[in-house]
Length: 403
Ligand code: ATP
Ligand code: MG
Image 1 (tube, rainbow, N blue to C red):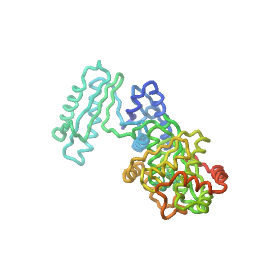
Image 2 (image 1 turned 30 degrees about the vertical axis):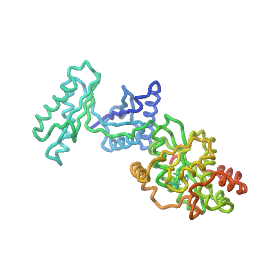
Image 3 (image 1 turned 90 degrees about the horizontal axis):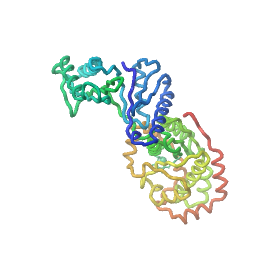
């Protein structure tokens, strides 16, 4: 049974004088995600480039708590890896007794389904005054385990099923045999806050996740076209936002109805520019929202060439209405790559649920693949009351928190 997790990070360790800001954010984020899952009684301590997570009063974690914490840590951006660890007195006899006991449990478990277990020990010591060097610790472990298990275990330095980790520090030693991958990246909140255009599709949730991974907190904006799209479309986006909020302090979801604007476009403009015109309107509203809430960039799930509205020419015509920084993390990704990521982060299942998107309302059979600036601007001039319609759409935005 374990009382402690040790959490490791990588990219943060390369930060100079900012490093403690990154570490503190990481600690706060882990605590927040844990609290969302009802885990309140933990302490997080930063010691020499590692974070130690324990229960209050140094109590043991139950099996369920161990699983819950693994899940929280696997979503905490900034973490490279983590392990449940046993702590012991570093004095050699005490260390070997504890390490052998820990390894014994792990080996016995594997022997239930295998006849031989391939293993190795990896020792490190930060206390250079320690009487044994790392290699001596590794050899001693092999010899003690061999005495217990004989030829049911085999040393394999290149491809072991089991690696027993030992870290000797000044005041204590750490023993572990399981290392889980963290999500990598940088802690959310170490870079500026941004706004993501979140549809019910597969791509935009992946774009949100990738932006969070680089340290940005994400608020979400979705457009719907009620009564031409059903209320279920928005419910679906809420579920996706909620899934994405598993990775950060909860972001807000802004919900904007653009059906009136779409009707104006339908009734006054050349049908082949509809999608590009819709997207320019979306971008204008997103820009106003960013200014209003001090958000510093707009994120989309656009990928070059994926559909007609995502040719370079159309992307730039859409981009032209804003001076905000646009972030398109999927620009160079294939659909299959983004599907793969969506599956890993758990949004794919939600995204494939069929619901109409507001971009497809009154969609023309053959949209322009290379809209000309001048022509698009001409089309916009034909829209009566465009400014008022935009203002009205902005004023009636609904906000959902705590998703
Ligand atoms: P996705 O799978 O993310 O919907 P897509 O491949 O369907 O992307 P488009 O429908 O052209 O492509 O949308 C491109 C991007 O525009 C989306 O990734 C998203 O960022 C934004 N977007 C599209 N529709 C909406 C919407 N209804 N609300 C908010 N943003 C949207
Ligand atoms: Mg879409």
